[in-house]
Amino acid sequence: MRQKLLSALLFLLIFGALPVPADELSEQDSSSAPQVQNVSENIPEQKPIIIPPKWTEFCEMGYENAVYKDSNDIFNIFSFVKSERVKKNYWAERRVSFEKYLKSCNSLNDDAKSACYDKLRTIENEKNDLYKIKRNQLLYENNIDLQRR
Image (cartoon, rainbow, N blue to C red; front, side, top):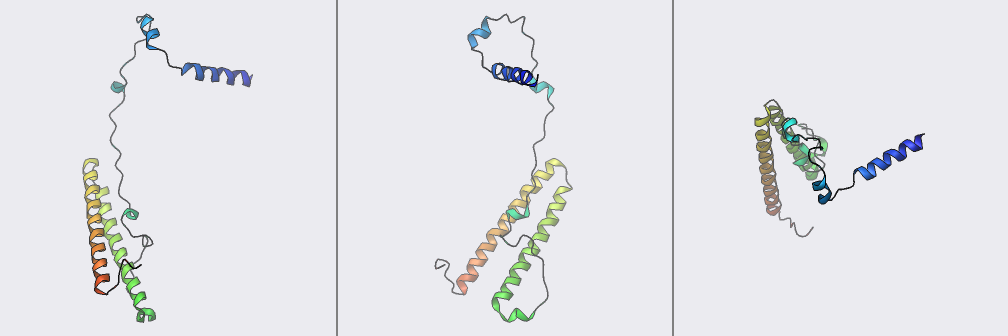
């Protein structure tokens, strides 16, 4: 019984989906064909999907969940430990700023929300550009050749 039902469904799927040449359509009596309503009339207008920006789009890899750390520890005598803490603090402060702005955008209506998200993306991209410029300048001042690495 199941096989007959499955084969009948398969038959309908295969032959029901075959295209009909235009010649055969014009020969059929148009009065016997059911009237089809315009589909766009029945579907309500859909709002565009607004995707909020994510912190991972802007954050340097490895610093997505950085937490601000104000305390000095014994390892501060090593410059790489101090510079790493400064870098983590930078990304932690940026994340807090990003999340505040995102929270204010989320409270707006849909039209304003889209514009707010675009503005947030622009701000964060500008901060990233400035960060890269400052980093390259600092490396240049310390006589570290970027091309050597």
